[in-house]
Image (cartoon, rainbow, N blue to C red; front, side):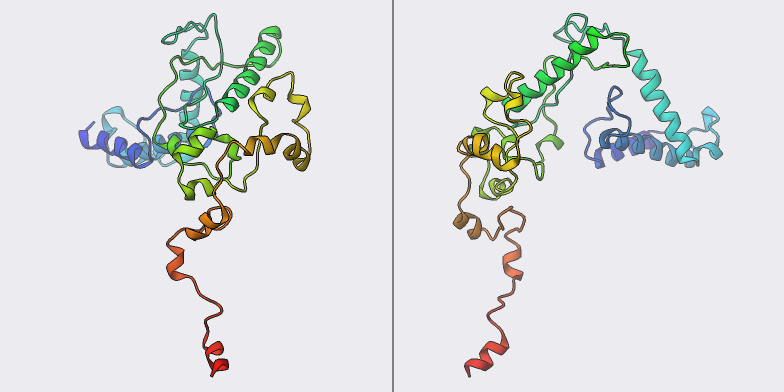
Length: 266
């Protein structure tokens, strides 16, 4: 295959914001992450085939025009062949999957460690239930990755609309500017303080109405965050959710400053 055809594929991967072509063969086939990888694989295959890049392999040009069929081929290979090629007793770097199983939680800078610990506890309960009921239709083929992979460029993009306690209080207070802090002023609180994020306490807060939860637990969580004041938000031209940028100030219209008002003054 000509080198420019290979370069075309990797250029497409880069333009999509990925550092490498690395589909999650143990994850859901229709997650946004995996759908992106499938589209890259199929669309670039079709393009290169149209350039007669696979002539030596006797690839059918008729088949290469069927996007849905190629997608089925891709899914069958990735989530069937490749998935099955990774046995459950593989030894990942730094750990032994035969003795310790778990779910990989991707690294994200600034994420609240209390939330990560809570999710890991839930994952542990799921894995134990699977081990106790091996004959039931419960599967978990994910293996532990030790040490955790470094955060990617995409993971450093700020998520929109997540509760403020998604962030570690110290990270929120020290790393975010006023604009970034304002993005999470009105998003609420999802979890109580870390001492209540355990299986023994979850029934005390998990099903509470929002107002009752905030009164009993949420106000103590919010006290950890240095929220921007209304004056600081107004100074940047932001609304209460931090959605309007500074650029909007130059184009804003003063509804009180109109020709009609001037005429009335005259």
